[in-house]
Structure formats: C-alpha cells, structure tokens
Image (cartoon, rainbow, N blue to C red; front, side, top):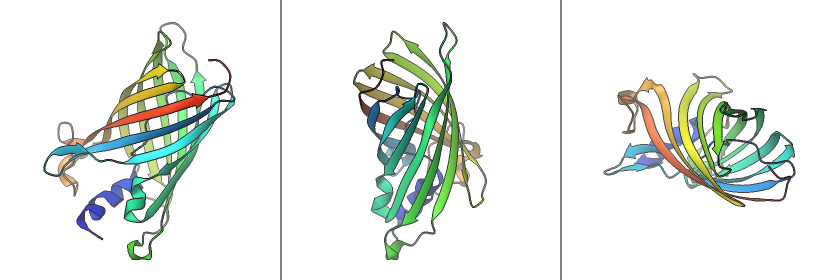
Length: 217
C-alpha cells in the first residue's frame, strides 16, 4: 500500500468524514438524494481538505423522523467498501427565538474488497445532537457535536461543527466547517493535519441535495 493510503486509510475507517450534518429530518414521504465532498485540512505541499466523498438518500418515514443510507466513494480507491445507515429525529421544533434540536445517529461498516489491501471489517456507531435556526424559510444555521466509537473497542472520537444550509427548494446547498478531535494534540498525528491551537484538525465540507415528494414543511 502506498504512503497516501497508509496516511488516509485510518481516517477513512475511524471518522465520519465526507458526510455533512443532517440538520433536520426530511418531511414525511419525501425522498432526498444527496452528496458531499470534503474533510480535514492536511499539508501535502499546499494545505487542502482531504477530498472524501459520499452519496446517499433519505426518506421521511414520519413527521419528525427519517432514515438514510450513504456509500463512501473515496474509500473504494483504497480497496475498502464503506456504507452507513441511520436516521435523524427532530426532538424539539423551533419556537420563536428557541432553536430546534435534532438527534442523529449512524452505523458505519467498512471492509476490504481487494485481497492486496486487506483490512479487517470494522463497524462504528455515531451519535450527533444538532441545534439549528431557520431564518426566512431559506437560511438554516446550525451547530453540532458528534461522538463516534468503534464497536470492537477503542477510544471515542469527537468533533464539533458549524454550518449553513441554503434552501432553494427542491435544491439545497450546505457549507460546513468542522473541528475533528479537538481533544487530541495535532503533533501526535502521522499526517500533517492543520488544527486549531495545536489541537485536532480543522476541515470543510460542501453538500448538495435534491428533494422530491413528501408533505409540505
């Protein structure tokens, strides 16, 4: 396996990179197709975000609850298939100046598809509460915290995020800034991640979605 694979593969397997936050569930009966690109900033000559990518879909199964699944495309270039399934629940609706609260969860699975790049199957569980505020039915600002743990053992991984989703129904565009593992000292990482105050790694992601059908919001 080449040097780039050795540096990136642990990241691909141990974090929910390449996925933007699902800020609120899609409406009941709606189908949303979505894709995202981006990840933590790393210095490889210039400083660039790791181009992790995912595609997937969501379905609104109830008024405040949806289910989702995504395929992780970048990991395939390293001979590793990745899939996540999960959903989100609107626990508290926005009321006046009080923001909404969404609880999200995902189960990740990764396994080798090439004999020459053998990686043991790994599964991860992620939970993420998100607060959000919708302004003018178009601009959805949010902040989120995420915890992720490998089911076979290992220490939990954490990240914090802020972002903006612009709703141009049926299209939507999302920009997210994320701080990966703020509890960890950047200098101990193998790759030259660009952290904040010597901690973790900062990153950026862009998401695009298209929604059709479903109840009116």
